Length: 489
Image (cartoon, rainbow, N blue to C red):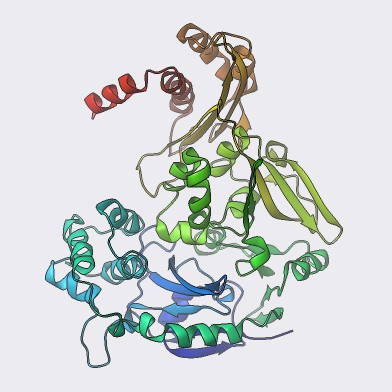
């Protein structure tokens, strides 16, 4: 057992014994350490002004990721390396090449968002020696700037990639071996418990320890990426004590690919899952690429998106359409159920006291099956879905529907199958007339709400139109659909 959170901040070893269970990294940096380059803009992981890097050992390698400090809790930082914008410049004041490129290309105006943008570009600089324009724009998805129009920022990224200087100047590359050794010494596998400021936090040493802790404290809040839970604290002011952090557990971060499908640990982040799912099931890869910004994808987890049970979570509809199964674990053992059966009602899931989501199995769709997932939101990037739909279709040799699975989020109190629509399609020829007739069955399956993201009427009509889109794309009329979209634009 241990009673301290230990990590490296820039170059300094930190050991804390007085961490509040919901103390954010942003507050720690600004209030305790006076590192005010990291800004608070939205306090919900949207604007990127608070972006920092967090490095951790993964499979023996030191990896750095951009994260939102405003919703990252200090309790999740054990055995990590936190890097802020203050660490980039040389001791003599010489700017880091990323910072200098921002100056050269006039990438800063009011300057409030600039440190976060610099850190996002720095994260890209560390991981991509020749980023494309698409890579640069993806790295900036989670950074909002009201002044520049982004073009000077993109040019700064292109400049620093084209004129890459010696890595000896860079503080991370220079100290990588030393930081790795220091982090290794902090990764001792001990469970950390701490009571501070009226809150209690626990960092389990292993998954077995996690099961034991939840058996003793079944009402504890499990925190993985905190991309949802962080807002419970910063926006809703909810009391979530006691808090159990699980983002560090390697047993929950494994991905296994077999002939039957992909098993994804509950702690696998969107960014980590993208590498595998984007290759094995490209439609899900494209969906993941639109979840939040890069900072959110680096923090949020597949298991967390499922466990929270949100009716507008992006991944559950896509996984339900593939007949995914979720494994739940507790001290008493494990059980596996169909993912669609996990969601019972709004805010209610089939998770017994002491259980946690351990993994999800995603069957590999057969080559003859057609699969698609669609996200509808007001902005293309970094926006919550108004609705999200997924379709899996199998046709026989005569063009008749043998198999159809349709699932939507944002249309009901839970992610839900469109079973009436499916029934209207099964055994029918896959034609425009069949699809048009099946559209009327959506009213049997769903009674969506009207809220600020969309009206009920809009959601219902859009769900119907997505079925039509799926038909056009699977019947060889995708080019016509693309032409129509271009004309509309």
